[in-house]
Image (tube, rainbow, N blue to C red; front, side):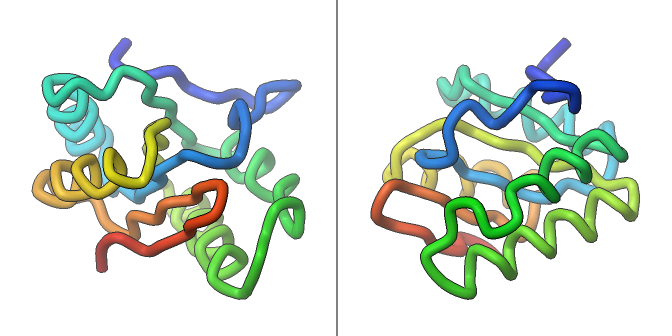
Length: 125
């Protein structure tokens, strides 16, 4: 397995800051993104997919948000999961997130958002 899937039933995101999250449309594309991230040295990669991923993200509603952007990103990620897409989550600091976002976007990931302790930012289209 190339990632650490998060399952409903007690799993969580392991903390809500220092994470880059992005949308990937297909499983082969997801596998390519994870392989490229691992090759670049990113070892802490998690994934969300399907109803379990939707349920987990719905539990986060209103939990750790500073403003409207976080809620918008959460709702977008939930909608993407409902369409059968994948969410990749990379534990990293902001500088690492910028590097990881460039790698992931180059492999087709989109709606890449960083959630940090004091910085939240959209890092792609």
